Image (tube, rainbow, N blue to C red):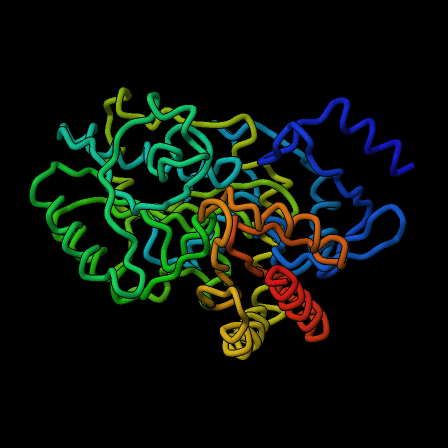
Length: 427
């Protein structure tokens, strides 16, 4: 049956981020549970990257399953303009309780749209105020999604080359990784003095798809403080970093100076259903409090505030408290810290970095370009499933972002398999 499904898939499906010529045969997954997924032959795979960073409490957690089942029998969907419902209100209340700096929640469909909302919200803020601020500052190497606005504030690379002439231009500053802190701060200061900047967008503490690049919170705090002093709207793209990934519930919880807007998705529903949320402060919202209807925020999606997704999010947010999930994050973070020295000793390793529940090993790009197209990725995509691990590298960067329910023995298997792969690369 699985072979038949693979052939049927090849006839009709276009998979994301997948070369269409000589693409690898996909694994047919039929079930999932905890930190594992299972194919149609019963083989298990440890989901070492939380299925693109969305699984928090584990696959098929019974509390979220029950919440979705109960909601689907009552209200699967209703439009969200002029209408409201309990799951959407409860989800927003939970989020604002966790992030009390913010006042309003605007729902969308996923991470890219949550960022798109944030960008539009910030730009229209200045339009509504009658000020000609329309430029945005972003980090080099950034990735904020695949819609046109989110691509525009991302790095110009293989992801966006075909669309570059259609993207709006942004001002970029270096990522403040170790050794680049002063360069980044200086560049930011110069742009603020010379340009009429509307907003500054950043992936706080960790650049995800850019290679799991990590930097210190003190630099981010200084950038947020400088932005506030220049009345520049600060946007934190917490699509990946939110819900515990960096060791705190939100990455910006570690900051003294809070951004004006944060974009959320991925772990919001525990990996059950797509949902985006953009949170803004009272300052942002007040620019839209007017009798002038032309200053309305004219943005929405057919599935904005979907009741099923919101019910899943509420259950997931409750689990963080009921199961002391952040203690699991701390446990995983401790394990990752203990791995550093062993990986640093391996031949072919350029850098090892970890933060919270994220562990990354950057390998020396001995052949081909450094980055997403490095051929190490192609070898890894074949190797890890053969050894019972779901892991998709970022070119020559191997990383682990597991569900928080992952067990010590499963982490050990992931570690051993990573080390085996690196050692075999050197032969």
